[in-house]
Length: 361
Image 1: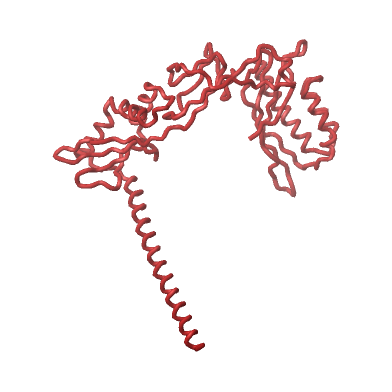
Image 2: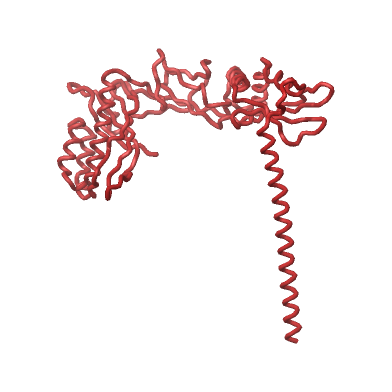
């Protein structure tokens, strides 16, 4: 009885192993077929429809691409595909016309063509623009064009509240989605005069994020976050001060317990005597005096951004830094980031650092 049971168990195990092997062969076979088809499809998109430039197919496709109305045709399909777009008709037509004329744009064969209908992909640097269906006959003709281009989901544009929203030079009448301020409430705001607020627009389903900007009055230059840029002598001097302050602050922190008071005095000398910046620095003394002291401190890599005006008498400068130190003869990274340094025009003293904060992200 025991032998019969053992034989039955052996047979069942053998059948199970055979079943698993057969299943594995089937799965590998299906995977191989799918991989071959995918590989063939990818290869089909890497070759031009024909190396001969005098074939009817080539001439038909190039005539369609070169037509002055093709950009407008693709723009029309854009609005059919994205009915809620914030795009403008003129900008869409100009954008697609530019893509068609770009030397990096080509027409490539697509897998799935038949004897009676051939498919091609219009692409630019790997980005698919449209699928073209060619009906074969005595003379090939384009039977359908499907738009494949995927636009930016959302484009954010910021500028001064009195600026205009422009797309490729064309003014768009659209109310801002929000108006904000970059003046810190408690540290700077009480001392500011004529605050400069920023308006932001959020444009959805756009063909591209390019050629969209806020145009300030009198053609003033605008920073990426929408503030008017100061580029006078005072601004240039303060940009260097922002660099000097950032280097001194980093050196103070990284030196830690070594010469803490002396290093703090050097930073304090760069800010206004009775400002929030001075108060913040004084409050760090106890904590920094317990910090580890790094050897071979390197804070030379600091770059100042533009002077962004946030009030009639106040602007900030973003100072981007990368700090390092030496350990056992090897240079190591301490950290990187951005300090936003605020300058206020104080009566009798001119522009001086009144506040600073480390930017997130």
